[in-house]
Amino acid sequence: MSATNSFLKSLGVEIYASGHRRWPAEAKALAVSMTLEAGATVNAVAERFGILPNQLSAWRREAKQGKLMLPAAEVEEPVFAPLVVCEVAEEEARPEVTSQAALIRIIRGAVVIELAHDMPVARVAEIVHALEAHPC
Image (cartoon, rainbow, N blue to C red):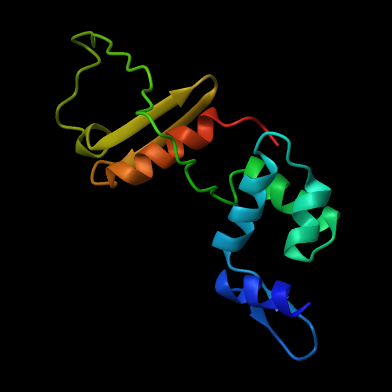
């Protein structure tokens, strides 16, 4: 149990004398992302983190609902997303609307995500990668 506690503390999990644990979002996201790896099971990952499988399944639901942002997977080669450029009709072009013009818009099927124009590129890449991930 000591090895598990030191592993959890290294992830930033607060462990109280009563046994209660406070999980930071990053630790939850790491556990969920491990379940998405090839050959991984919820039961095996839950055992590694010292939690019940149903708790991990609840975190997976949070990630699926967008309440928990998963870390971007590390890849050895560049990952590219298709970029679609559409011509805007004259009546649709409204340069006076600065709030809409200052947005980054990501469209994936029925999902539309609008981000501030100054969003860090790494964060935009994480969001695009999360949209490409397999559903929980």
